[in-house]
Image (cartoon, rainbow, N blue to C red; front, side):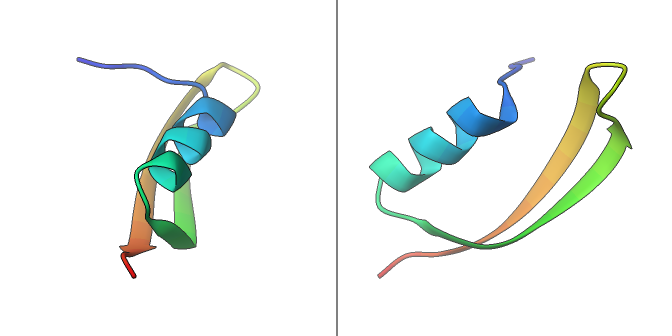
Length: 43
């Protein structure tokens, strides 16, 4: 299993050339655990 902070994951996704079109969150941000589903576009 891999765990990333949301800002770090966003940066990695951008660095490899994807555009984040939409993010869906599931979980409790205050509790520190969130599952993210990304809809991405590659140019």
